[in-house]
Length: 163
Image (cartoon, rainbow, N blue to C red; front, side, top):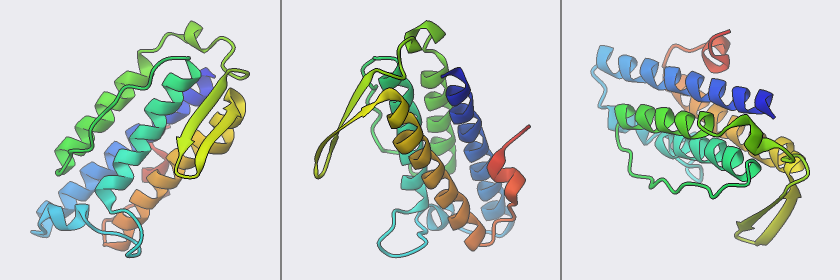
């Protein structure tokens, strides 16, 4: 379980780095940052800012649900790169602050989510590997793709984060 927590915090750190590069890109090219934060890959997809918020939600949600804890509520109010980086930092803290012993029995713990279509129940293992991590990576990759599509000079190493 600790490996999964480490993977989540690593991805959050990489996402933070992407946002810093995006902000630097905007400053160098005199682009209003709100324009880039509102960019989408397709009209029916969420904008960059929401992709980051959702990635954070999946990381904190997974850590707390698997630890058998209540998931802290974090309002979606960020409108700047700095605010989004701060959200990532706060999320990483929420994930890291849970003690390792809180995850004892997490693989078999029942996790129930309320979805638009009704409740979905997983074992902790299935929730982590088939829902939480894929969603975290999906939204982080979508954020990367929005930035790359809009000219921010990024590569795979930026997405993967520091070794």
